[in-house]
Image 1: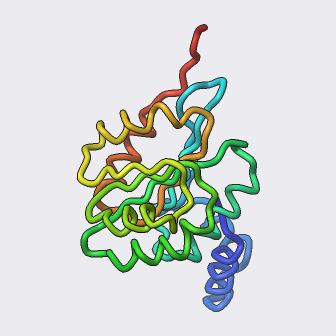
Image 2: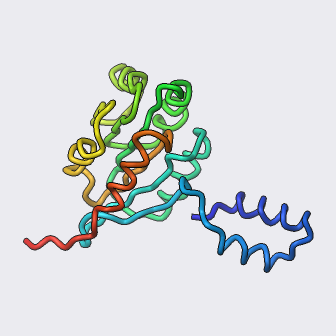
Length: 186
């Protein structure tokens, strides 16, 4: 997904360096994306697929909300999304920032906290600050355990991963990508 602001910045830098617009666009299109770059991956059942929105690398609340606003405009699913918040022990301030600046503004039915030091999210949910109907505190759970816990809920939903790319998020992304699109026979 390309954000106009990012493309504009790259074009401005290219212009300042004397690179023509066509060459700049060609370079942008052929550049290898950052491993943490925001991507949308389709997975699960072919007839009612799920979509992973890989937003773990967005380091601030406003970028995370901008990604969500853009993704939700595409109508991948009519169902309420699942939010996976990856927490880190050395980024508790980010966890609290995301509670106040992101989780209050995305109407998610299910919130899953993974990684380390998930207590701030758990506390805010117990206080009724976070509106998610279902909350799963999967602190320190393995990737396989996380996948098994969320599998019953993901069909036909957007799964939006936020918070931090490092730690539990990277192996979870790999596991979700390996979930092949399958046809279920009734």
